[in-house]
Image (cartoon, rainbow, N blue to C red; front, side):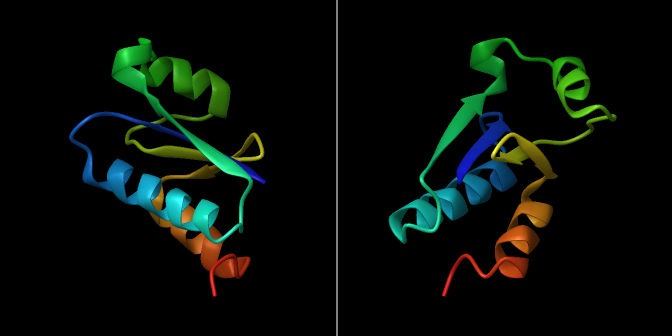
Length: 86
């Protein structure tokens, strides 16, 4: 399982999503993760909307194995629902 997080600098929920992904990776619950700084990469919310297929108003936007999960709250719930952390 691989996690990709699209976020921006100064976003506290982006930091929390990244910390959760690091925790999952260190406990071997996922194979790895990648954090994409949308500002540094020149990715707009419109670009994310095209990828996700629905309006995007916030970051982070989290994908698990290329499937859109949602923001931090949805990612955290996904981890809980799938018992990825002990």
